[in-house]
Length: 102
Image (cartoon, rainbow, N blue to C red; front, side, top):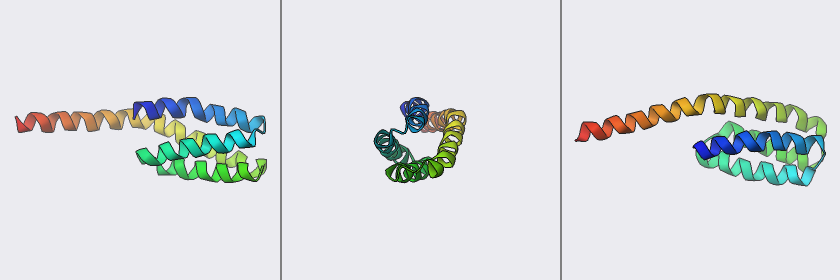
C-alpha cells in the first residue's frame, strides 16, 4: 500500500504535465497503468476517474480531460491523507489479533 501511495504521488503530477503538453499517448498509457494499480488495491474511485481520463486522452479532448484531471488530483490527495491512517489501523488490529491468539 505504501508503494501505491508513492506511485500516485509521483504519477498524478506527471499525468498533469503530460496533459499540459498534449502528450495524449503518454497520458493514455500512464492512466491505464495507474488505473490497474488502483483497481488492484481497491481504490475504485481513482481507477474509474483514470479510465475516464484515458478515454478523453484517446479522443484528444482537453475540455473533457481538464475536469477529470482535477477529480483525479483531489482523489489522490484524499488517498494520500487517509490511507496511511487506515493502514496503521489495519496493521494494529492484526497485531492485536495475533496477540489475542497467543
